[in-house]
Image (cartoon, rainbow, N blue to C red; front, side, top):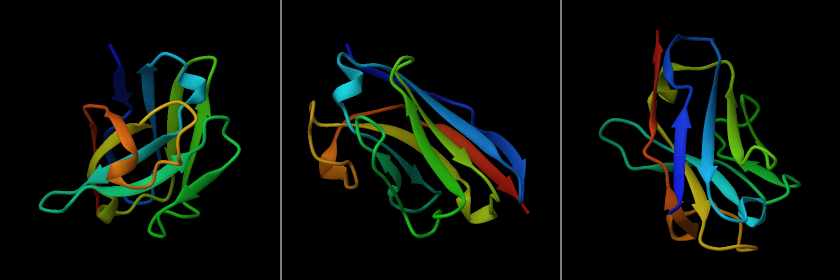
Length: 126
């Protein structure tokens, strides 16, 4: 059974940092592209960042570029999202996502996602 378990969320002040982790129970994790999405209150879930199976390619939403960094450790089957210079508009539930299958396309849209985590709340106070 596939499980993606996020952790690391919490309350932080504007300008602060958090690091989210996504521990994956996913066979052949090192062949799956991974991503982070987020959903703010009253808004649709949106793409945040993506990383290919080997970590060789990453991409970000414009709103988080140069502030967030996605990475992965395939030996620990874990994906990370380092968030710096946080803003109140970053407040959301953050979701880890895995691609549809091994060696699949990069995960940037809902249709690219095969598995979701349960989410972790990030709140940035002003």
